[in-house]
Length: 144
Image 1 (cartoon, rainbow, N blue to C red):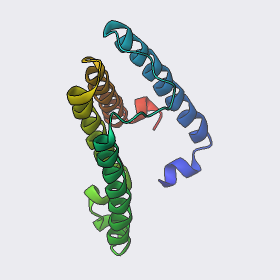
Image 2: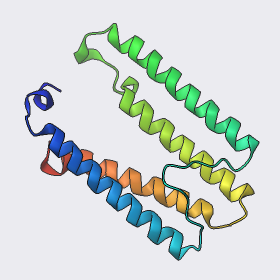
Image 3: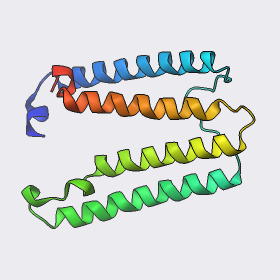
């Protein structure tokens, strides 16, 4: 963490990584929707399939926020070298994002009008997972 603070180019590196992610996400989404004949969604829109999906999604979001707060409260009482890795906010956030996306895919498979909609959601989840794994594995593509 201290290295990023002292790196004068950290902001530019972060902007480049975010720009690459946004570009690749848009391209992936457009290609997947075109190939699977799924209607295009507005950028940053999130439409619940039904009330069951809405309740599930808000339950997951609430549990995620509460888990981050509790994980922080537990880890802050310990020395940094003894923090539990699974209580770090980024671990909890990624876990709950995956659960939320997979819940969305299940609801789309069961209740959506277009039978291919869930495939796009699963593809997006896998794409984001591969992207995050590649960032971790390559030390942010050498930017770290």
